[in-house]
Image (cartoon, rainbow, N blue to C red; front, top):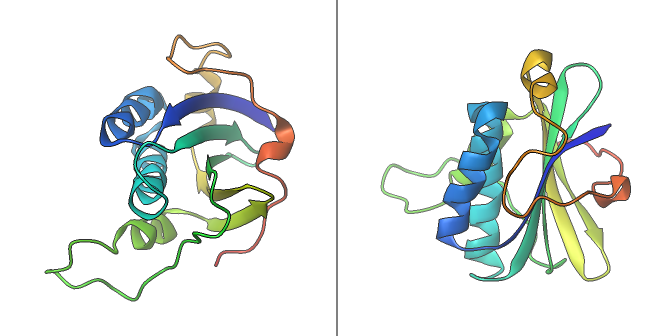
Length: 151
């Protein structure tokens, strides 16, 4: 595994836009999944809480997107198809449709919701190890832990 991007942020709507811009070179699926996961932090944990977005290169042309927040109890729930009039409930369904698999890893004082996507290896190879992006920090390999089955 090779860390590609790490963004430390406070979960706000403005930061969702920043995440999309920062992940633009990695493709629309990575952008969509990361922004949906950050939006879930805002909606279900609270606006302004600290969050970390990490993108990792995996073997076999896969990329892993993980968003860590400080509430291990607020777990994502895949809801049955949201109706056309529903104001929410489509984010995890979108992530579930795009991802090869996704899951949640809980630790003391935090959780990481993650997904794995297929991506073009050349896209990942073209991202420099130290891109000039606000909030970039080195990531720890243990932050996303071992893969688990799709929920």
